[in-house]
Amino acid sequence: MPRPFPLTIRSMEKDHPKTVMIILTIASILLLAWNVWFFFSQNPIFESSIQAKVDNYPEKLISTFDGPGRTKEHRQNLITAIFPIEMKNKILQNQKGFFFPSTKQGKLSESIKVIVINSIPNIEENTLVVRLKSIQDSNNQTKLHESSKGFVKIEITKTTPFKQLLHKLKTQKL
Picture 1 (spheres, rainbow, N blue to C red):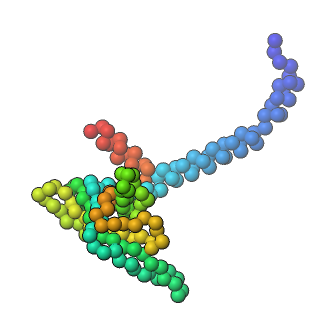
Picture 2 (cartoon, one colour; picture 1 turned 180 degrees about the horizontal axis):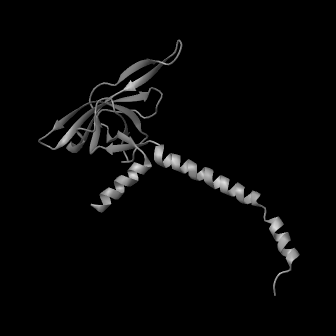
């Protein structure tokens, strides 16, 4: 049995396009924000070392300028890291990274900022020896000791999620 005409009109009056427009507007804004992130955000790409250790040089305390009349002290250690030889054109002076020292229980402690000083290829062992200096606040709890071991991650480049996806798709087809 067909619905009476007044019931149909009442139903159409209650289905106001205002709520549909609000939902479509919110969905469009979310889609736009996701597209901006996907195509334009710069995400760092890191390369991990095979091994790393703190050199047997004394730790330095360095004062840096921290505003009008203020200085801040940093602890600095020298670190040697070993990378695969393929990284010799990707790891350059002044690149930033992180050192993750191992604790006695074999667990990793918090990361310490490092900067590349230089890199030397070791052709005989097919490795790249990278020398780094740490930059650590003097009030940081993690103390580096001579021959502390761990690993280093160096920021090689920055890329968008879109480029990462394209690279992944290209490498899977090969």
